[in-house]
Image 1: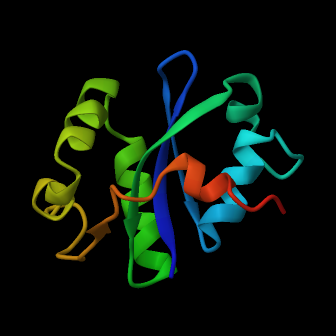
Image 2: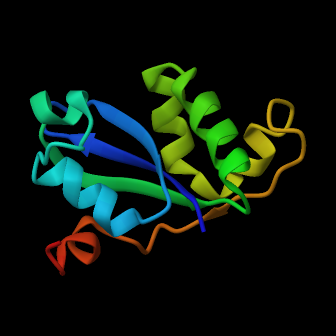
Length: 114
C-alpha cells in the first residue's frame, strides 16, 4: 500500500511525502540518511503528523501533490480533521478515497532500525 505522510520538523514546519515502505522512509528522514529528502536533512523531524493510505501509487501521488499546494494554515486545518481529507479535497482528487491513520506514530516507525 502506498502512503502519503506529513512530518513536523523541529522548526514547526511540515514536510509532505509519499512512500511504499512507510517505516523505511520515515527512518530515512529522521536519521538523515542519504536517500532522505534534502529538506528534512536541514529541518530535523520531531513527529509524524499524519499518514493517509491510498489504493494506488497514482492516487497517493495525487494527494501528495494537492497537499503540497496548500498553505501552511490549510495544512494545519487538514491535520485537525485528517479523516475529512476525502471531503476537503474531493474536487481535486476525482472522488478518490483515502484512509487516515492517526494511530501511526513516529515511535512506531523508529522501533526497528534499518
